[in-house]
Length: 198
Image (cartoon, rainbow, N blue to C red; front, top):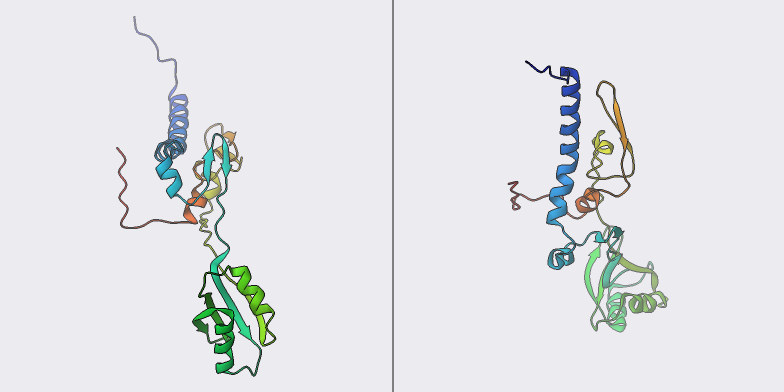
């Protein structure tokens, strides 16, 4: 006696599509989750990105400016010799000049903090302004129109619909992802890195 296949070809195709979709979304999360295991202290400390503590994600603060460096703009009419004397009086070394806007980048000779240098320069009557030498960071989120559907990379709790018959929709869990945009802000790859998937 032959048994009839209880699953019709459209049902089998639909199940295969769902299994494939789930596999494609979960595989990157599982693979990178194993590599970036927070219990591995040495790798967690070497990554200047978000650190995971239990289920909480904690943002690591990046410095906002170069410690001990200040950008100084002198008022019009201040001679080159007087600028040099002012730098010496402040205990600072001229690192470079941004000639297009006549701004000096200086660094403390004696390990003074950025705030100490700022206070000294701002109180000098020949200085127009002084500010920290700010740091800016790249935010490398891709411009791919399908990127919002890749919840394994960046999950905001978005609803994703898989075109099937009938269409299947599901809503993600916010921050249940590998924090790819955070990693891309630090590095987007290198030809010197070799990755093997075994």
